[in-house]
Structures are given as structure tokens and as C-alpha cells.
Image (cartoon, rainbow, N blue to C red; front, side, top):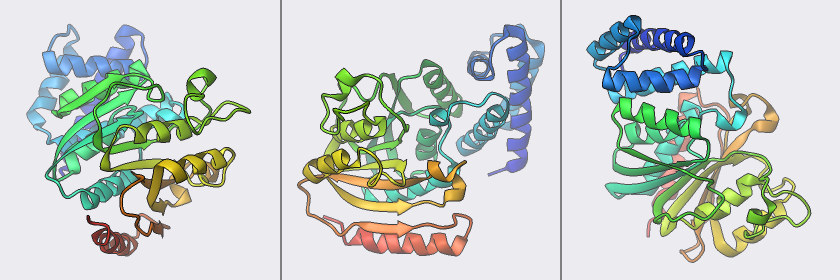
Length: 317
């Protein structure tokens, strides 16, 4: 990866977004969608934007360099126009852990991935640029701005990615996938009528959206597939957890739980862990449980990967 090129690309992109933002009197994110459109079709009367885009094309960025440039740009945007926590993209260190897990668990050369709540599409793009497999990827997102961002960035990067707008808690006409993945949005789901169709629904209050998404996500999973969720660390002990555990006992089995360092998250109360689920009915396996304390410690990561590889060999059917 050429970080000098990435820095140059970031500078051109940031300047373009700021020029477009001023010209259209809009927010950073809408301006980025517009910039992506201009980059692809070349149509603009803004001379500075046109010149910068020509310079961008001369850089001939590789896909992973484009992705890194967008990550830096979105981090910059988050400083001036922060999105709500559920709309922020998955940190790179965690995304690459998820890529490793999928690489180890699925040995097929071609796989299908459904991402529920795909947001800005950064996690999906990480899979598409990092997995050593052919990936048929579909991202589902309810927010129209986020889905426009994700689709436009994927087009510029040159990724074969599909996106569909919809509420992932509601039933959708989707084919079953090898992997269902989600950095779960945390909070209450507002529509009790929809929630009550689910086994995890609470009859006392609004139901947790992340519980509903886990239940719904498993319905789109192939019988031998894996659902991988980034969920609150206290998932199995928090309020409404008895409802979730009742559903888990009947419909799913926990294959792995990997806790993540709390310093990755803005507040300890926001800390998350990786939960890997399978549908009930497969041969039961001893769950892989592992605490990760420091993702910057290369030896700790090596030890984790060796332990996970040794465990996954014992789960092969």
C-alpha cells in the first residue's frame, strides 16, 4: 500500500468535497456522494474539482488504497459533522479480524455475504478487498444517505457490491447466504407491532434492535453457514438477555465469542465483542472463547490466530 499516494488522494478528495459543499450549501456526506458521481462521469462546471479528479485518476490507486483514503476522509468528516454512533464505520482493526474469521471458517473459493445494517459500506468493502475468495456481497441499510455513500464509494473503488434499502428487522425476500454479518446497531426498536413477530420480543417495553437483528439474520443463513455479529460485550447478561438466550437455546448455537479491548470504543459501556453463531442442528462444537486485550500487540494477535486456527480445524465437517 502506497501511503504517499493515499495522502495525495486524501488531499484532492477533501478539497473537492469542501468546494462542492460550499457550492451546493450541503453537508459533507452529500457532497462526497456528489464528488463520487462527478469522478465517475466527469460532468461538472467546478474547474478545481475537475482538475483534482484528473490528478486523482493519474494516481491510479489500487482498490485497497481507495478504501484507506475513504476511511481517512470519513474520519475527518466525523470530527466536524459527527454521525450518530450506530452510523459510524467499523474500525479497521476489527474489520480485519472479521475477515480472518471468515477466511478460516469457510474454505470455499466462492461465498455469499449478507451484511445487515451495512451503513457506509466500509466493512463490506474491507471484505471485498481483503478476502482471498470470490465474494457475492449484498448490503442492506435503511438510511438513504448511508446507502448512497456506500454505493458511490464502491463504484469508485471498483467493487462488485450490491446494496438494497430496507429495514433489516422486517422480513425481506433474500436468498440464504454463507455468511450473515453485522456490526449491530444498539438500542430499542420503535415498532412494537413488528417486534412482536419475533421470538426475542419483549412484552414489557420496546425490544432491543440488536436482538431482533440477530434473530432475523439467522433466517437468511444457509444451514452450514455462519452468522457473525459485533454486539455489546454484555449481550448475554444485559436486560432482555433472558429472551435472547431462550431464542439461542432453541434456534442457534454459539460457535465463538471473542471479547475486544475496551480502549477501541469511546466509552467502556459501548464495548463490543464478536459473536459467531450457527443454526441449530449441526454437530455441536465446544465454543471458542477468547479475550483480546491489545490489538496493537503483534504477538497477541499471532497467538489468537493460532488458537483460532487450531479450534477451527476441529469444527470442520
